[in-house]
Amino acid sequence: MLRAAFHTVEEHSRGAKALAAAMGVQHKTLLNKVNPNQTSHHLSLQETLRLMQVTKDTRVMDALAEVLGGQFICSPDVGQGDPKLMQDLAEMTMRFGELMREVANDIADTEISNSELARIEKEADQLRSALHRLLVDLRSMNLRQRKCEGLEVL
Image (cartoon, rainbow, N blue to C red; front, side):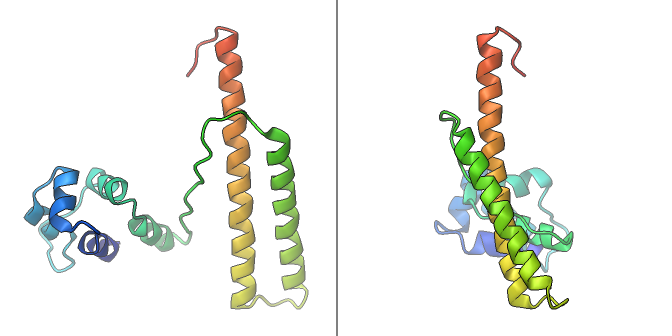
């Protein structure tokens, strides 16, 4: 994870000095905190979050997820427009069907190759994105309904 933070800082398009300024930390301090050979300085969780927010670089999250046996997937920005619930439901159902078809085809020989696993993961990612869009629209619908009814909005 530290190497991911190091590369995020070192490869930032505006340079490490500008990045440090945008994060509100001293340039040398930031360099020390992401230096894999430096043991006395460490990025805090807040600084790590700020690094990812400023750079829009998710390599640290990717590394963390990998250590925990998972993967980080950015949710699509779907905005706050009018819900398209039927389209979202149809999309999610279609993606689920595609995932199940891919799994069924790939396990038929009782082995999963690297390319088969990659296709399954791609289909699963597309299903997660479709589900996320559906949930965003449902939350938006719920929020509008509560506002119309004069209920407290949490």
